[in-house]
View 1 (cartoon, helix red, strand yellow):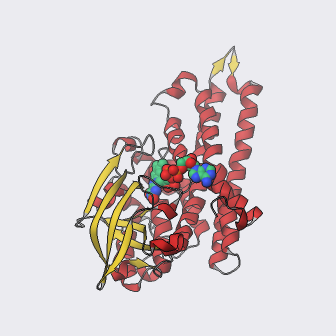
View 2 (cartoon, helix red, strand yellow):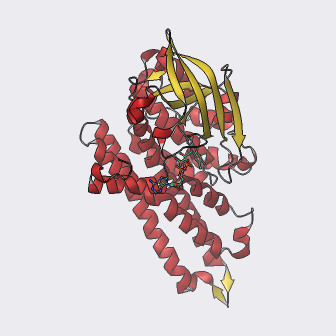
View 3 (cartoon, helix red, strand yellow):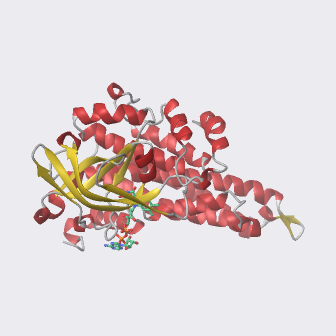
Amino acid sequence: MKEFCASEIVPKTEKLEDTRKMPKDIIKTLANFELLGMVIDPEYGGLGTDVVTAGIAVEELARADPSCSIPVLFLVGTSWGHVLNKYGTEEAKKEILPKAIKGEQIIGIATTESDIGSDLGSMKTKISKKGDKYVVNGEKMYISGVAEAVEYGGGHVTLAKMTPEKGTRGMSLFYLPLKDTPGITPTYVEDIGREAISCGGFDIKNVEIPKHYLIGEENKGFYIVHEGYELARGLISLVCAGAAAKALENGIAYIKERKAFGRPIGKYEGIQFKLAEHHVRIQALRDLGYKALWTYDQEIQGNASRFDVSMAIAMAKSVAPIWAFDAINDVMQWQGAFGYTKECEDQKAWRAVRSFTLAEGSSEIMKLIIARELLGKEFLAYR
Ligand SMILES: Cc1cc2nc3c(=O)[nH]c(=O)nc-3n(C[C@H](O)[C@H](O)[C@H](O)COP(=O)(O)OP(=O)(O)OC[C@H]3O[C@@H](n4cnc5c(N)ncnc54)[C@H](O)[C@@H]3O)c2cc1C
C-alpha cells in the first residue's frame, strides 16, 4: 500500500479538490490494484480479505490524500459492498458487485434526508410493493457519491419505511441505481472539505425497482444498515488516524526547521508537549481503530457479539475525528500564517476530518451507543 500510494495516488492528489467529483482514472487506479473489492467474496471478483486488511489500506490512502476524498470512496464502497455481499440476492450480487470491483460503478449509502439524519425512525421515504416490483417515493440528502453514481453508473444502498406503523422494525434496505433511473432527480451541495467526492441528494418519485434489489428480508433494513455503518465507522477511525499521523509528520519536519527567537520552534516545550500529546492520541486511535475492526472480524467468525462490535466501533469513532482535528489544527498553528493558506496541505486534512464528526453517525450518537452498552437499553432516552 505504501509503495502503491507513493507512485499512484500521491501524484494524483494535488489538484484533486478542484474536481468536486472523483476523477474516473483514480477509480480505475484503485480497481487495478484490487482495492475496490477487498472484502467481497472471490466468486464475485473480490479478494475476500478480512476488514482489518481494509483498515490498513484506508489508513495508507488517508496518509496519501490529504483531502480524504479517495479514502471516502474506498470506505463507502467497501462497507456497502460488504453489506450487499452478505445480504444481497444472488442475482443482485452477480449484477452489481463485479462492476463495482472493476471500477465501472460505485456503491454508496443513502439513509439521511433533509429533515432527519440521526433519527432514522422518523424518515419519510417509503417503499411499497407493486406486483412483482417495489415502488419508492421520498428524498435523500447529504449523500456522498451522488454525481459519480449519476454520471459513471452505480447506486446507493438505501433505507426506507415499508411498514411505517412498526417504526424502525418496519424499514427495508434496497439497492437504488441512480444513473438513467426514471424518477430520480439529483441535487448537489458544496462541502467545505473532501471536495473530490461529490455530496448531494436526490428526489425519488415513483421509482420502480425489481424485487431482487431488496437487501435482506423485508422490514429488517434498520438492523442490516447498522452492520454497514459499523464497518464504515471503523474504517473512518483509521482514516482519521492516517490523516493526523501524516499531518504530524509534516509538523515535525516544519518545527525542526522553522526558527523563532534564535532557535527552531521544536526546541520549545510549548510545542513539544503538544507534539507528544498528539503522538500518543494518534497511536491510541490506531489501537482503538484496529481493535474495532478486529472485533468486527471476530463477529464475522462467530467469536464476538454484535454488542461487542457496537461498543468497540463507537469507542473508536467517538474520538477519531476530534483527536485528528485537534492534532491537525496544532500542526497548522505551528506553521504560522502559512498554515492558514490554501498552499498548506494540512488544511485540506483539517477540513476533511471535520466531516467525520457527522458523516456515518455523529460523535454524539457514538457516545449514546457507548452509554447504552454501559447502562442497558432501558436507559435510552427515546424509549
Ligand atoms: C460530508 C458528509 C457526508 C455524508 N454522507 C452521507 C452519505 O453518504 N449517506 C448518508 O445517508 N448520510 C450522509 N451524511 C449525513 C450524516 O450521516 C448525518 O449528517 C448524520 O447522521 C447526522 O444527521 P443530521 O445531519 O441530520 O443531524 P441531526 O440528526 O439532525 O443532529 C443534529 C445535531 O444534534 C445531535 N444529536 C441528535 N440526536 C442527539 C441525541 N439524542 N443526543 C445528543 N445529541 C444529538 C447530532 O449529533 C448533531 O450534532 C453525510 C454527512 C456529511 C457531513
